[in-house]
Amino acid sequence: MKLRLHHYWRSSSSWRVRWSMALKGIHPEYRAVSLLDGESESEEYRKLNPFGYVPALEFLDEKNPSRRILTESVAILEFLEEQFPEVPLLPKDPVLRAKVRALVEAINAGTQPLQNLTAQIYFAPDSDLDHVAKRKTFAQHWIRNGFQAYEALAAPLAGKFSCGDEITLADLVLVPQCYNAIRNDVSLEKFPTILGVYENAVKTEGYLASEPEKFKPAGT
Ligand SMILES: N[C@@H](CCC(=O)N[C@@H](CS)C(=O)NCC(=O)O)C(=O)O
Image (tube, rainbow, N blue to C red; front, side, top):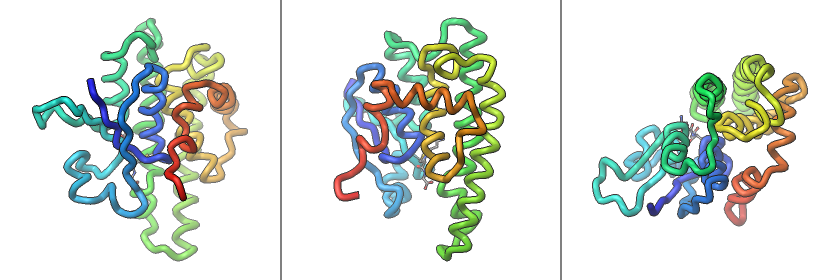
C-alpha cells in the first residue's frame, strides 16, 4: 500500500495520524499543505478534502477515484487500526475501547473544531489587535471547556497514559491538543491527569518521531 499524507506541521489533526504511523512503522510520502497562505482553501486541495482541512490520506496505487482519498483524522486512525493491528492503539476490553473512543471524541468533536483557526476567524474576522486578542480568548475558553471534561473522564482510567499504562488513540489526540493549549497560553496545571499524560508522552519515541518541529519546513 503506497500512501501519501497531506498534512501541515503544526496541525494537531495531522499530528495524530503521523503519530499512529510512527508507532505502526508506516512510512508514507509526506506532502506539506500550508494553512497560512490559502493552499488548504484552494480549489485544487478541496478536491482532496472539501472542508479545506488537513490531513488527507491518499492511496497512490488506487485507480478508482472514489477509493483514493481518506479524510477526517479519526476515520484515518480507525482505518490504520484495522489495517495495521500489530501495534494496537485501542485496549482489548470492549468497555475500555468505548471509553478511549469517548476521550478521542471529547477532543476531536468537543474541543478541536471550536478552537480551530477557521472558527476563530469567523468569530473575530479582522486582523487588528482587538480581534486577534478576542480569537485567543475564544480558543482558550473552548480548550479549557474540553479539558475539564477530558480530565473528569480520564482521571479514573489513567495510568501513565489516558487509559492505563499503554499509549492509546486517546493520547494521540490529547497530546497535540495540549500543544495547541500551550501555544494559546492555557496552563495544564489545573488538569493534573492531562498534565501527567503529556509529561509521559513527550518522552516517547512515537511523540519524538511525529512532533511538529520534526516536520517544520525549512526557513519557517
Ligand atoms: N475533523 C477534522 C479536522 C481537521 C482540521 O480542523 N484540521 C485543521 C488543522 S488541525 C485545519 O486544517 N484547519 C484549517 C484552518 O483552520 O484553517 C479532522 O480530524 O481531520
